[in-house]
Amino acid sequence: MEKITENLPPCISRLVSDVKAGRNVSYLGRYTLASFLLKSGLKPAEVAEIFKSLPDFNDALTLYQAEHIAESGGRPPSCELLKSRGLCPVSDGLCRHPINDL
Image (cartoon, rainbow, N blue to C red):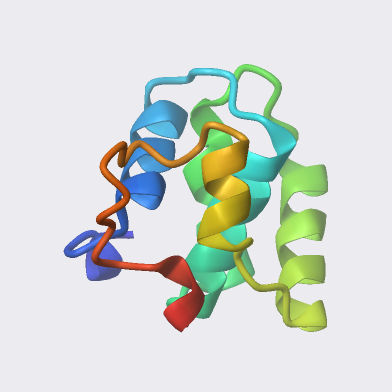
């Protein structure tokens, strides 16, 4: 994870913080984080490792889902969807790092 921790979009940065703190993260939040990290160059096993601090973590299931996202070419959801679901912490609409540029 250290290789991509700089210049993260605000939504991804918040999701990383929430996951590291062991907070419950919605399915959409988990998918967003996993697909972003995979598109950023992490391998499925590295992505699965990040989710270990979640209270409902299941190693085999998480690895399977990360592999499936990687194999299917899953992309992070649009900024508009993330905003509508409360996953975008930017309130002024001036996010300078749209995740869809990957």
